[in-house]
Length: 319
Image (cartoon, rainbow, N blue to C red; front, top):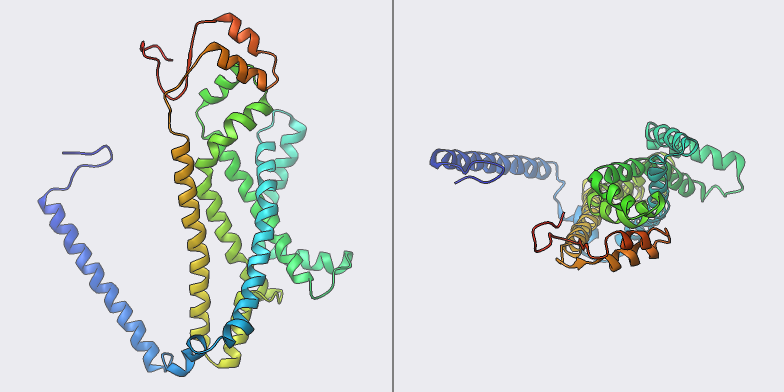
């Protein structure tokens, strides 16, 4: 018995896969034991090094929470700005007007080609020389600026690719009922492409959260990683501090991806076919709502011909 994607494994293949799995688990256990033994021999697993994280809240209230606040503030602000800016740039790259498409393409390709750290350093110098932003706030502004410029350009490509991935028939059908290109983009293409784009968008949001650490390493931005270094210097437990911070980053990013998976599933379920049949009057109402003026003509051309949503008409000629 075979599936669409691959042939069902035979007895020999099953035995071979079980053997490979056992070898991998043994190798993984050996590596884990080697790491544990190395840490133990160096005294990195001593209770004194891990005690600040399990007895009392001083480490969290003094170091971890303030740094986490800065990380989330910078990431959230960058997301709020980069998402709509990336959507606008991505749609602009699909414009029929040369004076819109060319500048958008130049902006996207330029900032997508520059490392985000360079953009942060440039932003710091820019705010220092040409603005009245205080020296304490400059690292925050520089980090947000770098994240927005880089990630908005990447998100623009995600949006453009998501729209272009839709079947051409979607655009043709929208034009056939009299929608203008702006209405087609807003009412037809963007809502459908969101589900396709969602995994890539969330991956980029995870990148934004992680890239805030660059500001702490270079621009003295007091984010979570910078706070971990300060905490490690105070307690003398570099490995323990970095481990706790790594776990926090994993929890944040896993929460983002889990929420995205739930949202994607909800969107897909919401778009499942209802099998409802739209008559000519329904199409007239849709076109009229879009203010195209073509709805009446569409209804008059074929007053009895139904449009089918989410399936074929019962007579087998739903197309």
